[in-house]
Amino acid sequence: MKATGQLHDLGQSLWLDNITRALLSGGTLREYIDTLSVTGLTSNPTIFDNAIRTSGLYDAAIRQKAAAGKSGEELFYELALEDLTQAADLFRPAHDSTRGVDGWVSLEVSPLLADDTAGSVATASRLHARAQRPNLFIKLPGTAAGIAAIEESIFRGIPVNVTLLFSEAQYLAAADAYLRGIERRIAAGLDPAVASVASVFVSRWDTAVQGKVPAPLRNCLGIAVARKIYRTYRQLLASARWKKLDAAGARPQRVLWASTGTKDPTASDTLYVEALAAPDTINTMPEPTLQAFAAHGRLNGTMPPDGGDADSVLAAIEGAGVNITDLAARLQHEGAEAFARSWHDMLARIATRSAAPEPGNAGTR
Image (cartoon, rainbow, N blue to C red; front, side):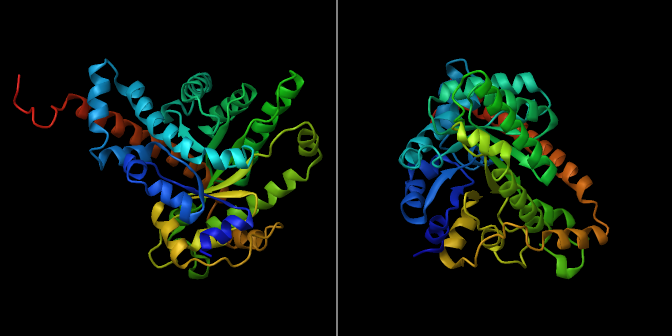
């Protein structure tokens, strides 16, 4: 059995951190589902920007929509929903067989709304209604404004993937927002079974401190943070607060490990996949990481529920001069800014291609 199958059997969902029309039209996503145990996928503004930038498969649709009077974000969301609803249909059997635990795809609201609670909620509601798929998450950031939007969206029954979480404190804020939304639904007599995942970014920690920590601590920070969050996640699921919601029919907000591709060329290309193996969680991987783990990855046990050596590793890194609290805030801010840049680049690219002549019609009037 491939390592991907072993990881799936352990109870961790393997999702693809990518979406392109070529993956859909060429049958590659179908192959990943059938042979590599992939049961979902995630997207973000950078992924869609890269997909449109590197492929001509979107050009005809862009011109067609532009001719119909569409532009900007409206045109992009139509493109994204065409891709993601097709992917959602491929994952629908996994969604149905797991009763909604697995088989999800994710669409992110505009990163320009990161500090706009009302705008985020309104956009989340609109996109979820347009998709008409039970297995599509709307991604909202774990920023201050995003936390309020998460609670309100969950209360409205919108499945939410919380993105841009880096630290335990940021994870707890997102988890609390989810729980408050569910508690409000129960108080209002509504169905509490609204799905959510909390996406914790891992490898960016190590990129941020590369060259700033002693060699024995290289590529250890992201995993230590993840272990600490995993301990908190298990504690939350054992809490009286959660047990009360569970008894009422609520679903746990699963932790999703994101940014799990290895950035350090001197480290194993399966470093984070192997270190983050844990039941009842998700690992969303870029294609090269998925393929590498399928080819030569190894399952070497699971994450310790008690956090293992997380506290000692984090203390050593703090002792080396890294302020982890400040770095978490910086990473979240920089992540939001990077997505905003990708969003602007993508919309500019769409505008350019909207105005481009059809192939074979250049120079015609």
